[in-house]
Image 1: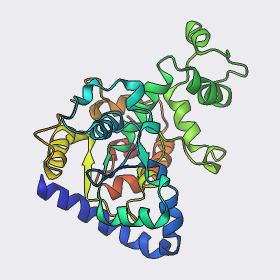
Image 2: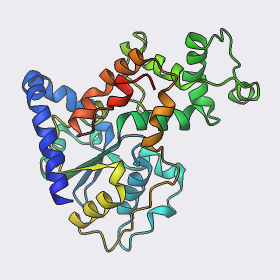
Image 3: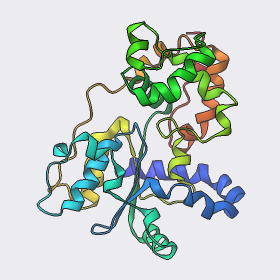
Image 4: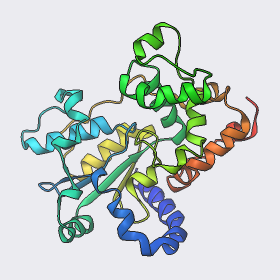
Length: 284
C-alpha cells in the first residue's frame, strides 16, 4: 500500500507538471476556488478535501468524530443529516490567508477519488432515480424539457414518478455535454475531481481510491496514529459496480461517450484510472 501511494503521487506529480507551468500565475485563484471543500481539524493537523459521491459522508463523519476528542465516538453513530452538513465542520476558508498558507504547508492533507464514470452513474442513481424534489426541480425538469420530449413536466417529483416520467441517464449525459451547461461550474456531485481539490496546486500527502476504500482508510488512520482509536465505517453495499458501466452507457451514442470522456479525461489521467477503451471504441 505504501508503494501504491508513492505510485499515485508520482502519476499525479508527472501529469501536473505541464499544467502547473502553464497556470502557475493563477495558483492563488485556483486554491481560493476550493477553500470551502477543504475541511480542517487543528487538533490533529489534518485537512480533508471532500468530493461528493466518493465516501465523503463517512469521511465527514470521521472529521466530526475528531472534533469530539477522546474517547472518539463510533463514526457510524453520526446521523446522515449531520455527516453531510459541512456547516458543523471548519473549512479552510474561515482562516486568514497567512494561516491558510501555514496549514496547507504543515498539515496532513488527504483526498479520495473514484472511477469517474462510475461516480457519474452513482450520482445519477442517487439524485434522479430516487425521490428528490430539489434535484428533480432544479435539474431533472431541465433534462426532461430539453432532451426528453416533455415540454411541461410535472412540478412535483412524486407526480412525475407516478406517471412514469423520469429523467434518463442519457438525458443526464446530454446535459453534461450541452454548451449551455458548460458556461457554468458543474454541480459538486458531477464536478471534476481536479476542479474540486486542485491537486496540481495543493500537494496532498495521501490520495485514496474508493475502489480500495477499506485498505486506504486503514493506511491513512495508521499514518495518523488513529487506527486503534477510530474504526472507519464500512463501504455501502450498493456501490455502483464498475462491471455494470457498459449497461448504463448502452443508450449513449459512441460519439457522446467520447465527448463525455474528454470532459473527465484529466481526472482519469491525474489519478491513474485506465481509459475505458470498451466504451470509447465499441458500439456496446
